[in-house]
Length: 352
Image (cartoon, rainbow, N blue to C red; front, side, top):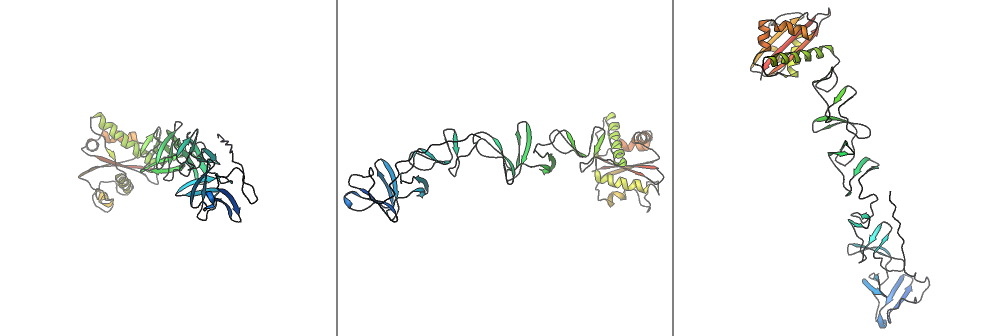
């Protein structure tokens, strides 16, 4: 970090003892010192300087209400000044990390040569070059103007970072505007990669309900290792592939509908029918799951061991084929394997 070296040249120090100090006379005015400090006798002995500034031999001094010369830092009329030990007002010079202008007033929020002083008048080291800063609360990134980003993303050196409402860099899993992101320990946003069982797109958003290569991530973003869930997604993909071949719109996947289809798949173990074990029609499961719809259809199958073969069976059956190509908007797929290894399949179609 650049170091600031300032040489302070002070005026001759007043004598420690009492009496008049040579060289400080103003015509007939004289300096005096008593047990309280230094005071200035006015011309002709008519009185003494009080409550204000006086210029003596080209230097400025300030006297309090009792007439005593002030030294050190003084706030006068809302403005800071500095008087040396001999009372002379500092001007056009640095006092520590603070700069006094030509009027003696401490300057704020401005450049002094290559140095910048802030709102409190103090020199800000490194101001003018953006840089990372760490304090007791964490890391933050100071801009060249001294500001910093809050509640937003910022790209720094080609990497994305997110800063919270206080301006501190976030790490780990974060939900931002309804989407999940992951920031490494150094704050860099993960993108185009797996973090554990979760995949982050190139824009950093966690993937959900989709295939990433040969892996499927569910509604919570987690890689689905369950065989049934994978087979259900494969069926959905094959349905839309078949519809596309017939220039039909793709069906949206409804996860609540899929839960209902899963329930129906379990029921097929005891009652392989479009009627439920309690004797009600299959579509009562939609009401059970609170699903609203205009029209609905169901395909069921048993004994097939993979998505491709069960889809082939359905597509070669007129009634099942009509459902797959039907005028529906959403689909949910259910798969269940019983204790003997027999696999049961259900497709539920609805129009919302």
